[in-house]
Length: 353
Ligand SMILES: Cc1cc2nc3c(=O)[nH]c(=O)nc-3n(C[C@H](O)[C@H](O)[C@H](O)COP(=O)(O)O)c2cc1C
Image (cartoon, rainbow, N blue to C red):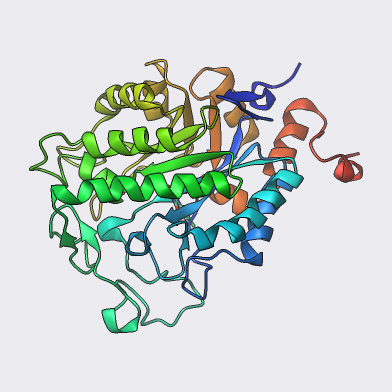
């Protein structure tokens, strides 16, 4: 019998070959700082498709230059980005995978150094304006931890933000992506607008995200799925809980979203987490009880665990982040473990005899 993890998943006209996805992960690898992806990204994303994942979700990809996390982020704010992304989507498709782009505006969490191990030690925190940094935008002027304080945005700027997401979605379709994911988690701008912790004065805090979803939906073909990543629980006092997010998820589906990717936290500096395998699954399961399709993510690395989440009705899709970086062929390994044979890439079958 086919394991539940290897049953296809249909989202509108898109059918994924299994329920395994690569979680979005910033790579900060656009070294010319123009947001243009390179051969490195073709190899990086292609490897997961060859490894059998049903869906690859890209790193946070900026909808505007000031929406980048670092100067080296990928972008889709310009038509000039489309051709480079097309090489990535072609590579994933040729390896039998499907790919969604995560569209993001980092808000007050942007404009920082990547802080990777190969960077100089003094490259920590916000990039100074005279070294290629920029004035970030926030809902209020309050800084995130030790980052540079953002310039507060007024309500009159929301339509421009909505339009930036919609235009990036149009480019995503042109670049050959199979779906888009709207990043409304981890304290990025859409999440900052959504939460009472970071937007205490907001009168209709859900409005900007719902407008983005409707605008992206309007820009995409009817059969093209729209995914939304939420921090289902803010992990902050007075913040959104899974109960709040379950209601929001239902409204987002009525606006045109097809799946909610259920993450948590990232909103306030120094929030306490209790990371254990599947720590965010209860949030996903709560949203799913509303009848909303969900992705679960967070320290899921064991094939039996992933199988149990799908078979037990806690998630429709399972996303793996760090484990995929360690083993891009995790899906094949999982299929071998659960079904006794790996069938995804026939050219590799001798490795599994
Ligand atoms: C290197 C790295 C980069 C990440 N970048 C993003 C990102 O661009 N967008 C996002 O929504 N989450 C990002 N995350 C969070 C992951 O998508 C994922 O939710 C988290 O790592 C938990 O899953 P895991 O335990 O399987 O790694 C990142 C995580 C890592 C480790």
